[in-house]
Image (cartoon, rainbow, N blue to C red; front, side, top):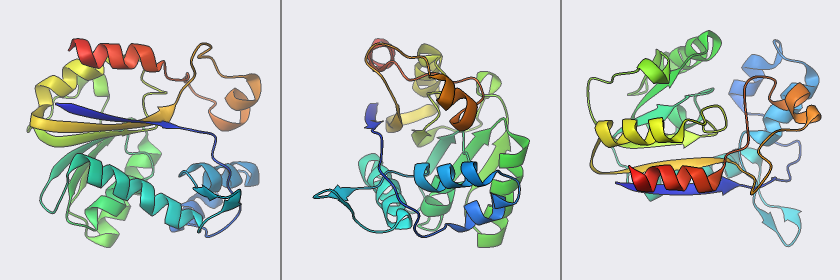
Length: 212
């Protein structure tokens, strides 16, 4: 198996195109968190110190980079670990990729389920804990987009992928990481990620995947 690891930097973003899924959630969130979501949903590329393109464009580049790196095409079967608000499900699904997302969030499950139905995507979403998840099939690839921060059990993830990826299957992982201190500051814990979370330890992550 191959793994493609992308370490996310601190993206500079500006208020720009408002994606539909953020609009749908805006009434349930504080104005501050809506602004954070708009800027943090995807990485924004900077050219000579200025923002290039809208956030939706940056989002599309990120999703396409994952698809290209994983060698996906129509009919490919991919596990989306975490699912979140359906970023990858929507983008890949509209290109014929069969994405199966898993999440423990009831709100995210409802949202992605509705998204799949409204856009008639060849995808599915399941509310299940990763620790007890036993898929009925092997996947051609897996994506971990911002989920290793919430799941630091790298060895468990590696063992799962060895069992449930098809031969030659690849993994795309992007995350926020630090070299030494992996705990979040008070501001981040209070306003950005209030739940259980830690910066990813890239050394332990790579070690776990190499060992398995």
